[in-house]
Length: 169
Length: 310
Image (cartoon, rainbow over all chains, first blue to last red; front, side):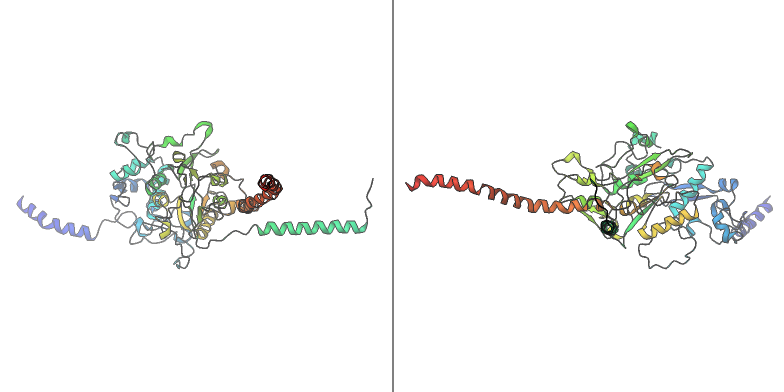
């Protein structure tokens, strides 16, 4: 028994290190996170814990990640160029969709890729268009407060008195 | 009785007619020139994206320090139509409202945000005889409440029924409407509060010219999703706020009868007379009055003077 414990003691850290360095590859060539914490709107809303695993079990990577996960693409627009694009290093939404977006007032700003990706939503828009768009067709929750719980500042912003919290949405 | 039709009369009338049409056309073409605001910013509203969350209303309320609403902004019962199918309108407590529409043949409702459209040639500005309104180079139509005398002509002039009167303070007249967050944001190149709050990117802030290009591109790329028209590109001479819709605009409460010529064109002849009437007429008619009564006055003076002479 003692010998077995010794083996475990020695091998466990080794196994752990190996696991960290060479993670188990997911379907799309990358280790998908179990959940993603979205806290961009932290002023008005508490962080949203997005259950990534549940979604990976139900849908292909490319149904949300457009063309960055190396498993093809479902979007007609992306297919023109990315039908067999390789998986990218970083496939997080925020790696392409910037948190804030205003169309530049000055026209002198050079556009790097003037033909495509020019009407790209900002991060907040991308997440909502993607999540809510799918939830509407797939009968997921669509009420604002079903994902977003208000912070006190959020309650004030939406003129919610405490007793009205029950009838929200 | 009959008039003799000679070659000369035919030519004469023909020539007069031709000249008349030429000049009439020239006049209407001249009235088409719309002031260009090259630096004008705007907002592209995509009705296909709006989900009626009312975040824009809440953000506007906070930004403009408006009074607390009766119902919280999470309450969706406000979308239910009022008496006679009336939709909510902007008023002194809310500079923007979102209304719900259920167009026929569509399995989901559409939401339309209402606020000042910030016209290129604002009718409110043209109608204001104290010049309380200003169109800024950034595109906002703002006003100086201290100058406003509360005549409410702008409320009638606006083709979109936007300026509202603060009826609760009639002795301190104030017209209230969306100012594109000019004082707090637009002046510094920042987007208005409603745009910042929109979770769906249904509101897109940018230069008006770029937004038109983006709008056209969306129509081109997803033709089945949009009506081939950007509302506000030409309506009433063009507006800073532009709209894309998946159903004909009249089905979601837009007034599609608004002509493309600025409202100013149909009223400028009349409005040009107003200052003249106000300045020249009093002097002119006082003069007439004095002239007409001079004789009588002279007689009266004589009557008074006669006894003194004795």
